Every structure is written in structure tokens, then in C-alpha cells.
Length: 232
Image (tube, rainbow, N blue to C red; front, top):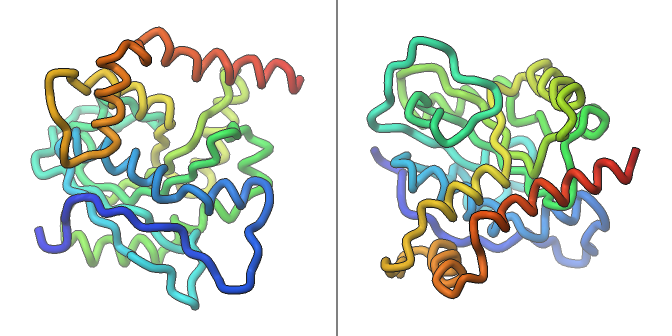
């Protein structure tokens, strides 16, 4: 399909004479290319065609007003039930097309309060953005609006409320970075040379030297649990 191509790095957008913002907004702007590269690799390794609609930020638009990626599954599986809201790798075969926005606030948890405070996160679900995605993807199944988040609350009730907030604001599904990174690590093989992907090559080297093992991936969850417990 025209317009879908391998991943390319793009640095953060900087405005001359404007100092970087401190806090959550800075996290979103400092490492967009790293966060987006991780998400792109995840979809590509699952057989999706991935397109980045923008290579620069138009002056009349804010970054939240656009999608980071459009993803297309060339061979979607027909499923009898709707996809769950919180996606896992095994759900991807049933995803036909998606509009993906990446929020790489890697030191944060998308709690109900945080989501309620930062409504700008949901600008990408507006009608104009979805219409543009349909124009670029062409006619076909509905486009799933996917939000990639750093983490969701460990507490079941808080997680349920976070899902409710996202649903109420037009999000169709969510993916978490711990899920994405754990899946990429499991799929990397030490006897392969990933010359076309710096990310997979780094994971392969770490895995080869025993510096990153499957149990260590649980540290993402345990550290998140300790931070959540400490804040209560």
C-alpha cells in the first residue's frame, strides 16, 4: 500500500528561543523518537504495515491533534468477539486497522486523576483526525483508536476507572509499554543479526550477555507497584 515504509528516526521538534518545559510535557517532547520507535517495532514485528502521517509538526497544529502512526493488518483474522480494551500481543491478529498515539511519559501512571487532568491526551480522537486516517487508509473496517500508555494502575478498581475515562473520551483500546517491551524481548533471538533495527539489536546483545532476562522484566511491574503504594 502506498505510503507505508520502514521505520525512520525523527528528532524532537524544537522551537528557536523557547526553553524546554519541565515535568510531564518535557517527558513527552524529549524522547518521542525513542518511544515511537519502540511502538513501531512492536507493530511491524507482528506483521503490520505502519505509516507515520507526519514527519514534521505543522505550525497551525499541536502534536496532540495528530496521530503518530496508522497501522494496517494485511491479513486480519476474523474474530467472533470485540477486541478487549486493554490489548495484549495475542489480540493483534484480530486488529484490522488502527490510529495510534504514543504517550511516552515513562515515569508516570495513567491513573483516573491524571487522565482527567490532561484531557489534551484525547485530542487525537476528534472527527477530523479519524476522517484523515480513513482517507489515507482507504475504505475498509472501522479504524481502532489506540492509545499507547506508560502504565495503568495496578489496583483493579483504579484501572477500571482509568479505562472508563479513556472510553468516555473516545479511545477504543490501550497498549502499555511494559507489554510492548516484554513482547519484543521474548521475540528477539540471540542467533540473529538485527542489522535493520537498532532497538532489536540492542535487546539481542543484552539478552546474549545475560544482562536482561525474562524475570527482570517483572521489575517494571514491581517498581510501579511500589511507587503506587508509596503515594497512597
